[in-house]
Each structure stands twice: as structure tokens, then as C-alpha cells.
Image 1 (cartoon, rainbow, N blue to C red):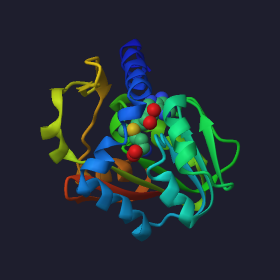
Image 2 (image 1 turned 90 degrees about the horizontal axis):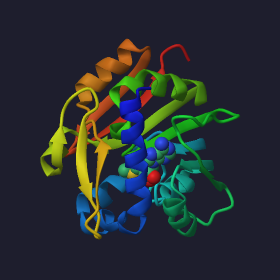
Image 3 (image 1 turned 120 degrees about the vertical axis):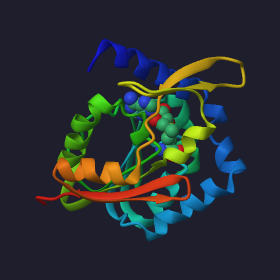
Length: 217
Ligand SMILES: C[S@@+](CC[C@H](N)C(=O)[O-])C[C@H]1O[C@@H](n2cnc3c(N)ncnc32)[C@H](O)[C@@H]1O
């Protein structure tokens, strides 16, 4: 949208590409995160599933257990290589693409994204949600998980502003600025309602979990 956020989005993807080998560490380290993964069983995930920003496939494997098919998209070849190894199932297909640009040629029963919404710059949210609406089959739902406001306390270099950012570091000492919006459950629900969605977003511990569908469907 703006030159500013293009630069940030490039730095964000560079961070995930360079840090692919370190990405799974929090899943091994934090019980809270592992518990969150078990949530998938209670969420309305099914049919043909599209997963945006799938990363190393932590969620993809769980989605695959419940889905007829999974199409999992990420920009980073480095994380996709790990995801492919973790999820070697014939009904799972990986696509290397920029989710801000990519549009599927079909619709899906579930569009799932974990820890992705917080990386979408606020000015891009209307386009992001409109895009999701076009990807959903009639009766389909967007299902998402992310960091809630309490997680801001664990970030370094938090900067508010039109595009909120935090600083992330990798083992080699390199640092990257990435977009990080800690959506509050109630304001996100209100925003989605105002955009024509029926949404249920809840704070669960330090995370948010949401289910939303276009109200007209
Ligand atoms: C916080 S990780 C989430 C990964 C996974 N969903 C999870 O919860 O473990 C964000 C992911 O977004 C991917 N990503 C960043 N920018 C992207 C873009 N423009 N298009 C597609 N994927 C992108 C990164 O490669 C990374 O895998």
C-alpha cells in the first residue's frame, strides 16, 4: 500500500526466511503454545482448508487430520521445506506465494491463519478481509489464532504508530523490524462486524482465537 510498509513487509519476510531453522523453538519451549495447538480439535475446521502463512507446518499437520484437503501458502521456501517434511500427506499441497498478492483459483470451506493477522499492517486489513471473503465457499469460515495484547510485554522495541512494529533477533545477532499488531478480542470483533462479518473472537490466556464468516453468506 505505502512504500513504508512495503519495506517493512520485505524485512518481515527476510526475518522468517533467515530464521527458519529457529522458528520451531518456541513450540518446543512453551507449554502454552503446545496447548494452543490442541485447540484445533474444538474449532470449526473442515472440508477443503486454505492455510495462510503456514510457516513450518506446526498447524498444517493438525489441520490435515480434520480436512479433506489442505492448501498451505507461505512466502518462505525455507519454512516450506520444513513444513513439507513435517506434513508428507497426499492431501496437503504447499504453495510458495505472497499472501498479499496471491489469489486462489477456487474457494475453501475454511481459511485458517495462525500468528499471521498480527503481521498485517492496519492499512491493509480491509483488503485482507475482503480477500478472505472471496476465498470462502458459501457457509465457509475464517478461523485464526494469534498473540493477544498481553504478549506485547514479551517483545523488544515495541513501536506504536500507523504500522506497529517490534524488533526480533536471530542467533547470528542480526535483527529485523517486523509488523506486530496485538489485536484485542473485543475491538477486532467490532471491526469485523463493521466490515460485514459475523465474528466471535476471544482472549484465551495470552492469545486470541477467532471464528468469522461474511454475514451475507
Ligand atoms: C509468525 S509465522 C506463522 C507461521 C505459522 N502459521 C505458525 O503459526 O507457526 C509468520 C509466517 O508468515 C510468513 N510470511 C511472512 N510474510 C509473508 C507473505 N507476504 N506472504 C506469505 N507468507 C509470509 C513467514 O514466512 C512465516 O512463516
